[in-house]
Image (tube, rainbow, N blue to C red):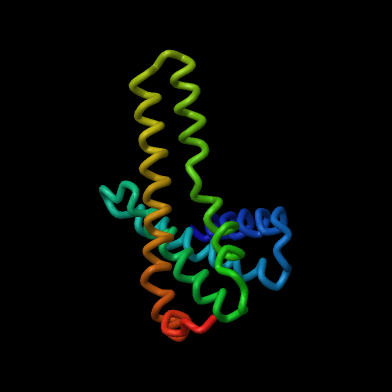
Length: 147
């Protein structure tokens, strides 16, 4: 589990470098990616977890990104985009396309629908974390309508 978390942190840092994120922010984003991957990995150890691991990982990314953005006074997307990259189901989409090209329609549909549901669980996890934590962490932004 530790090895996978280190690789998730390195992936996050690499994508942060690609998007030209400042070095001081990169380490925080890498930590968020590693912690989210460990949470996802732990949930996936449960039998029948399915896509719950993706949801939990995305929720942890969203929650920790909200906290880090408030702490560093930066936009949340600086932390979210590099940290969520390791969850994107690109390999499932690739396998789906390969199966369709080999005329294995059922297998292609299985991989494709799994990719769609995985992406939906990622979106839901990020959205729910933002919807729940932003009002708790930044209550004055919601009440202040003068700007």
